[in-house]
Image (cartoon, rainbow, N blue to C red; front, side):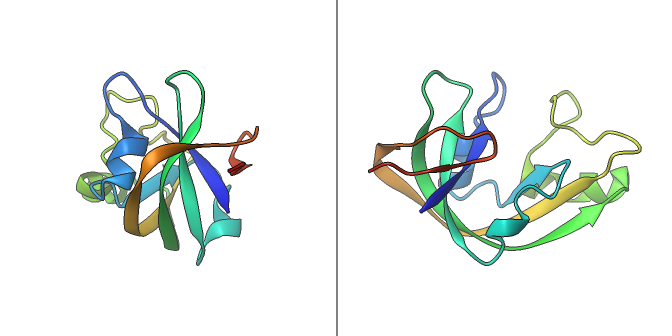
Length: 122
C-alpha cells in the first residue's frame, strides 16, 4: 500500500485529524494526489520526528478551486485556517481531495522515503 504524506503542524495535527475521521478533505496546491483518487492509501504523519503511517483512508474524488470563498466554505472539512501556512493563496488555487472511511492503526507502521507518497515497509 502507498502512503501519502500529511504534515502535522504546531497548531493542527492534520494527519491525526484525518485518521480519526474529522478532516475529510485534504488540500494541495498541485494535483499530486491524482494517482490515488479512487484508491485506499495510508496516511503518513510527517512534521513530528520520523515519519510513520498512522492509518488509512479512501480518496474518493477531488475538486479544484481558485476561489477563496469556495475554499472557505469547506473549512469545516479541510480545517485549514487563515493563520496556517497551508491556507489558500491568491492566483494559485487549491485541489481538495475527498477522504472517506478513515481508520487509525493500532500501532504506527514504518514507511520508506518519499516527498509526496511512500511505500509502507511492514
